[in-house]
Length: 283
Length: 317
Image (cartoon, rainbow over all chains, first blue to last red; front, side, top):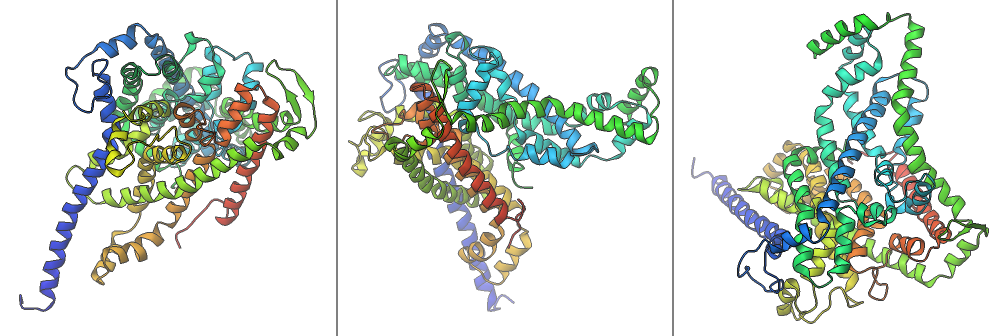
């Protein structure tokens, strides 16, 4: 049997496959470390003493001075606070409104359902840079210049979240409404006490996505606020760039503080985030 | 679920009315639907749909920074035709799209194929590839600026063996756009990798096993099995990255922090130019006219796509 003519090629093929896996692993790890290098260098430089920012090696000694400086001498805690308020409020409001709308579109029968759905989905390609100028003038007219309302309200609405949640609700068992209707329970109560608790997995993934997007938002805060007390982390960072143009140890320490929450949220919510991103367009 | 439903019914019994006849139930359902839709419908109308319409109206006015409107008809559009800065911005965007879309496509697909099968630490590798996408574009801009500082930056140093040590990657008009594209690819390839991985996971293992049994090599398996079955995914990736590179945040945030459109306007994209016209020069009407052009472009892209895919549905060939 071993003399079978096909046997040697099979052996060779499996060995080649195994070598291929090793090679693939080595290439993948090398590329991954290269990709990570800029972020690694950010971490390193944030802890280097001033004057060593451009040294191409480990810090001569690790120091907290840069971080201490941006957290005390610059209004960074305020920026962090503003960012946290905006991101959390936008995320919470968006999740509530989108799940309400998505539930109506997925489960309730009413005339014009498909029309409303089509209209909402058709806004999905519209991004902020495109409508920036008219949106700014509308927000200004509504008295949203230089206040939290301006930072928060216009950022709540996007059709993407509605679309994703609607897909989720389409798969709910239909006995749900029937049972609730028999019990004489109104739709608002049904939604609040039954539907929302059952949406937890979908809401979790969307909340990671929305939080990251809002924490990282820059363009809208840049145009809608000019008062430094209302700077969020990203606009604060951009102003830091202007003030400390060459003091890279401070700029990078600030950067580290700015990305830390996103990295933590990302690592904690990675699985959910990946799920929602995958389903964003594919099925 | 049943317990909460039971609890609900007990609580509901004291306050609710009987479920009623079919027509009242219908009416209640319709009323509830509109109630649930109201917040998002109003919000989307006010903050997404209205701006699109408003841009059209605005483009016919001369609007200064103090909110004075003066009707000027199509003057803004005439001006667009003879604005060398705008043609340059369009040209920059075209070059950016032509470089970014294929490069990030190939990078994303390559990475997906690389990390599709398991090897030690594959989860960590995937995370490292995706991590840049979780960072803010402002921080990415600041970080790369630091890495590429003329003569001193650590990556400028690393480029020395290749004879590029004296290149000003962000300050030289010949290099700035290429640098901007490179950073954009670094930022978004992990996201595209994720999309491709989802597409790869949908491919039935039997197809590949069958090809392997038939003696197909790695390249043949890719060319004749994987690539055709990835059609819908590839299409989706191309569209999203096209839209992102023209109108996405990466077309503004990165430019703002990295170069402010310079040097010599070589990185001034259309959306950055719109921002400048409105918020640096106070020409809101003119900025709105350019916005209208951009919206027209988006609508055209959407229409073509809709037609090409038969209503947004695409199937594997």
